[in-house]
Image (tube, rainbow, N blue to C red; front, top):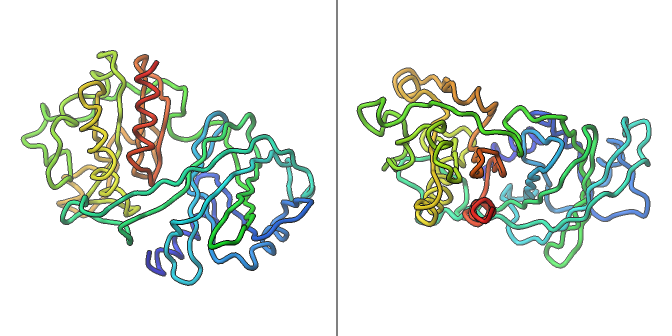
Length: 325
């Protein structure tokens, strides 16, 4: 990851895009946790990495928390750490009541590796490393407001305890887990002259382009809907996610699961005018950035949503759950 991307990455995390407010992190720990901004900021001293929370929004109910550890010296993603997450419900105003918190869950954190070696199509954007590593956890939040997380991190023979606080929304902008999937009628192969009109993949998978979400919901099969743009990716992970995650999952489950690939942008305008105009389906699903993958059960209910970096194992786990229902 370049220095420029590192600055952008950390800035987005600190500003709290879409309601996630990362204020700081800490190395080491204390017997009494405090959650005001100054205390958290001061506790960053000594950590060889900058931790970040990656989701653009976190909502009440089951959530997917994604963490990245960015090496302070090289700007690269740390790939060989071991994490555990402790989640805390905080006071309504952590600045006024910094010592008020209640630990509600301790969860394992799973390493997710987007392996780009030999899978990225020519001409598509790629991450800055062949192995892009993030760490995921799946807490459930029972109330909106401020929450905190302490990460127990083992790295290079030492243990660190970074703290972050973030805002949990009553509802996320995008379709949430447990909600019905919109019966979208996006463009399919029947509406265009060629697959390239609705897919920016070098070699489009036509099986993912031949039915609308509305039609897939009528089949009674589980569904994977992938909002990914390999060529016009704004997060640098779209192409790799399609090649290294969605395509392998389709090869394994395509006979039992409906797979749908939707380009987030109007490709004619993107190619002809250089304008990235979202397609109507993006607003219908409430998506604000890509890549975004939804896994839907046989009843048409969203059971998992994977934003940003993921790997084929995480998507496969989500698919296996809906197949088992």
